[in-house]
Length: 151
Image (cartoon, rainbow, N blue to C red; front, side):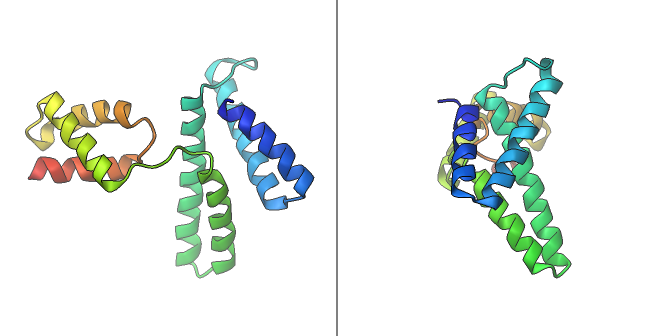
């Protein structure tokens, strides 16, 4: 079952269960996926699961940014709503890497590339992003690469 088929199935379940929040989030997500597919190559295009995960990650990042903004602005009720939406989106993302897995992947990639300084960070990041394939966000990867290249 592809990610989009799972999304369609869950959308129908949310309709049956009359879960307004989940239904709203899934409709928004379906729209974002359709928009990305059209932008990719026209109206008949389908996104691969990897491309769909990128779209979901972008939506989750938007929610995370909104949560931070609402909390800074003292709008706890809006932050709570965004957190609920974020938890729904996270159910469609692959399992995140643990800190130990991430550190090992970074160490291995640095060794493969032969990087010795921060000047080679771009090369390491490029190879690393292919390896982790969406299981860790770019900011976390960047911090770990910097930490290991410093030491």
